[in-house]
Length: 391
Image (cartoon, rainbow, N blue to C red; front, side):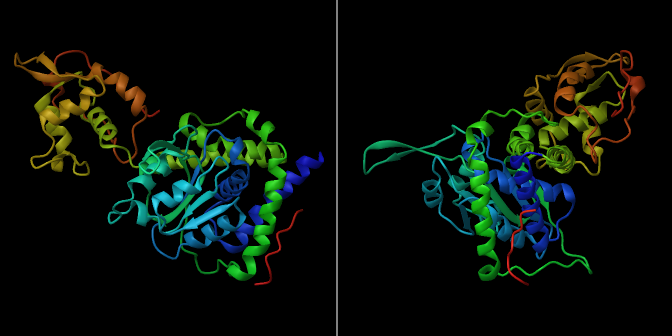
């Protein structure tokens, strides 16, 4: 094992030890992910994307703020806030940015959070390079381009907006069970030793920033999830040992969990519910399709507007997926406006290729005898030490 590999493994192991000393984490994969995220903050200039870290729990006292304390102490140039103005944060983000950490994130995203559109815009845009905020400065009669690229961690109760969680590693905290013990974190006693170790992390990773920038790792996931996890996987590969496998296992497992737990948009839900409503039928009248959609007790369509989902609203949504109604003659001789199953196939394959849990159930074949055409079969879903004082 080379000196660099040994040092890297010891560095990451030490971060992991520090986290688990003060926080009861939900599982090993999440602990590995937070470890790698912290390390990645020390090489931000090398990354094409700045992953977010969302730390959330269902209730208070789930360890969210304590984990944020540890993340803050170990990250590169942390900027911790619970209530910062957008102007202050924008002017803090430079070419070599701080790590933005927000506790009580409902002050930005919650229902009572008004006037924070600029800050939300920074957190959304700053995931990717070359997404500056453009402002006009009347005092100098000039246009300013403000940097937005910066890694950010946000802690709060409940889910964050989709635009944030889609760019984030999600940490689902939970309240400690009886018998789960951790050391108490004291700011004056414990933070300084962790900050000293953060300096070592910076020196370790910044020696080879250009090399880190050139690495294109094999990723077990795709699209935006791959962009988000890439800096973490690069750090793991750079460290060596068993960390490359741990990083990819965490990336795959947590991404799959996020996909299964995420709140899908109303549009995608409508597509999935239309698949269920069609069952094995090849065509449905608009009226029949609406009746089946609104008859599902757990679906939102009966309350989608004052009178529930209407034919016009249905048509407007489906038109975005290039699905349009037409005149269809049914087997009983009646001609009516309706939809052909074949027109949904491409959208189903692209946006909801598998039945969505809690939405799709057993396919319904109701009123099959009233419709023309052949039944289409339904495809099933298919060691370095961090000494932080004595507690």
